[in-house]
Image 1 (cartoon, each protein chain N blue to C red):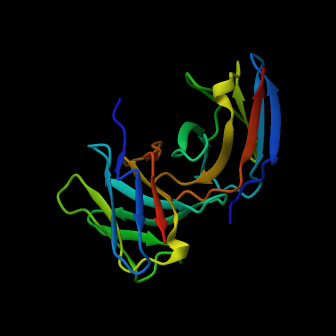
Image 2: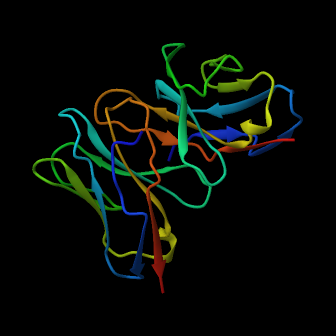
Image 3: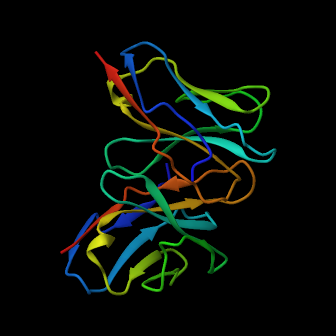
Length: 109
Length: 114
């Protein structure tokens, strides 16, 4: 079973920041937090990952709480093309990814 | 930018037939994976492969399934005798290896068993 808990769905207005929360209270010390998304039935697309520190790349920012029991994925300026299912996954590098149901993000004009 | 490719994009087969799904991982990657997603359901791990052998497999990956890296570039998933319930999207993924790396997925093969 997935080690994370995410809201089933969220809406976001186009151009606004989308903040997607994830709880992972049983995360162990060496496990990373990974975020992927899936648009329709396409292959999961890697977004970002982190261990302890906050991370930022060209797609998103990842904020991990100090106790590492939760995190937030931030899409700074959501577009219609960001409509997708977003998965938060806790795993070791090289481990097998266990996907939950994720959060269905709908970006609306 | 390098990417994982998969062929065919779609495959229709009769129940009981053998199918081979092909993947070309990113060239310098060392770890390879197969996942599947039945329509409307979660993405499920099938098998991982490293150093020319299976590292781990799920309960789904029974004797009907096998994987192979025949020529150093392709990574294949064979289903020996397909069942109706094997109908799904099959995704290949690869990872370079080492810490702080992540899996990159291919576009998938949609398999329909009739």
